[in-house]
Length: 347
Image (cartoon, rainbow, N blue to C red):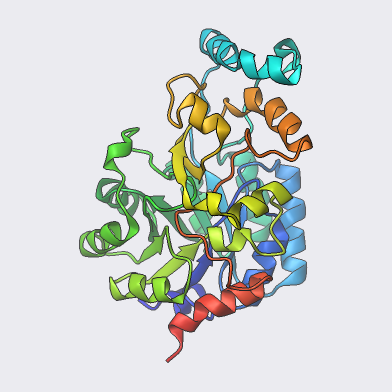
């Protein structure tokens, strides 16, 4: 199957949805440039989702993707939250923060009937998921509109599960990828492997298209992924440097600095493993810890530290999401970046 033809785009190139780092402008720019732009929806309310979809449909006639998380919302654990706040107390003291003033609660919402109600009015061409797939009835609703369904797998087992449960294509998320790991059948990070080991295994195991993601930052990497049998690529970190991205000046500077050479998986900022640039908080706490509350409850305790540190021009307490391969020379706009990456598909 030719992925570009199947998705009705010019190049088999998907811009990775990056919650908290972009809005509809990036998705619109990539779609208009011939790729598949993506809107991350995990941090949106249904009302905000509706407004964003109106913006997309007003600015592009090309296909686009909307992305949702499929995590189970955990029951808050007061004892675990208290232990986490106690571990953060020295940092609260440093910045003069009273932990009693910090609210609790999730910062990201899973796909739900309320979101499906919004999507039904727009019938997006592509709907993708992270952390598995939604309940069968919700997935059936999405497919009833003609939307194509993608989801991320980090292991062969996850990929086979996704294919069995209705994914039309699988995104092979290698260990190099920035942001949250899409792992959902296991919490064991030792199961996670690199993109160029994962892709050929999934190509061999699956009957649906495999889309390579992780560490793909230039046309040469795109060609390598395609040579391994990938039907297309999904690229995130490269687009973080686009002028349309909404990351902070601190995050942008970190991506352009030597610090970007050292990334690590960490669960400190959200409660789930995600790859970001190593900073003071990750070094001092240890990037992976049993202390943070379950995803997505952990950010509440971190938010005031991040706010105070960023006010002092410091990213020491910020999630500086990044993959292992940062390329700063692709261009300044999303269109330029897409054009640079699409050179891999030239005849």
